[in-house]
Length: 349
Image (tube, rainbow, N blue to C red; front, side):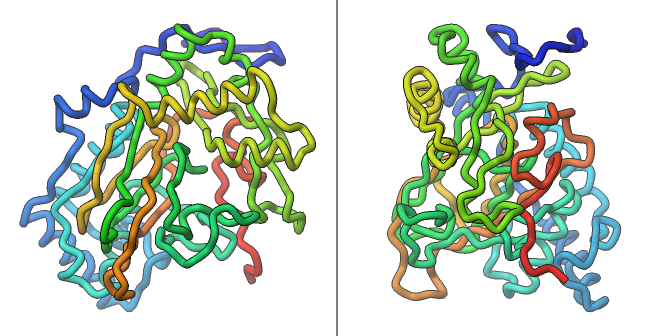
């Protein structure tokens, strides 16, 4: 274990972080072990678990992993967790057919998988534990609008949880492709090629909370600077959203300039550039699982179907791992709700 860091300065990672999460797009292309396909027996096991929940009259949020009994599949899910936390940081699960389930049953199935993976946390002020990533007609350029409620292109970012899951209920008519990149590999590239950009990324920034903070201030930002790259107890972790950083620093009357601005924009540029960028298209039933500490994801703009029942709909869950890596305190408090806290739920009884 590396020595404890007692300085007020952020701990500096090595110039090259050696970790399975430091992959390039060609590595994912060459080895598809990160893609997992459920077989008929495993689908049947899920169906039995869903039936047991329905028989007890329970709903998502009303049961934990003990209430969603799995046997063989539980061991396989544990392997996915290991791959997310100690491997490449990305898993794509195929084999689900959403057309076999109504929305209630599919939500139970998805929640059941989630509680075996970890502990879900709220992802917006309404308290949604299963959120819908779909176009609601909102304008992403408007103040405090979150991108997942629009059909706009979303720049590279990671979410404020250990893991994000996206289940494809319906794909778009066209567009909406998912792009992923290793933030570990991006750090290694910057440390070797642009070391002058690293200090600002380690110091971090105030992030815009888009009106979903813990106060009534629509301009609330993170109270402290959250590092883009955090080195703690021998692990590199990432927290990045270029739009939230630039808008948050502007709200703090500390607009980014110079190397700090260049550093933020360069992370985003590299994430959608060769050799880092890996493109994938969501197919119906795909479940994408990403470690937010190791993976940046982005999305192309999309065109939707005119019929509402066919429109693009990804079901999102944010969750924390039960035995997730230790995180530096200033890095772990990403939403002003404490270490690994979700979005503060407004109007909760």
